[in-house]
Length: 189
Image (cartoon, rainbow, N blue to C red):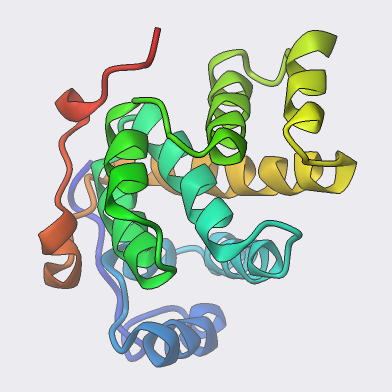
């Protein structure tokens, strides 16, 4: 369905207006996804709370964006890969790492690669990881808190990715420099 309204603060339901204002303050514009989600104050406010909590997680800003892009690329969410690629650059993710994550390739930094692989397995296996996969994540230097923080990011992106799929969210011009197409993703062997 592509006939969803991209709400502004003025057209949104009352329960979404404050959160749209916060998004506009944080980004300098209201991302189209936020405008669409504003139709449901419960969804928009839940996403905003989840995003704010994820930003306070034990993961660094680069690690956070790696998780969000990995999930979005696997799910084929063109909007989220583009928007989080812009955020990754702002967080100072190096270009080689960004391109690897966007295409499903291996990352040269061993710890970040372990995070990419772990996140990929969570999505691909719907959380049914075996002990060896979890232990490999811990062996790379992550702990139980980080494992659960990754799950927060996976949850957040599942909500946004699936919403974008159903509503066919149009990419904001601000994200255009990092436009991405799901055909670019080729999962690492």
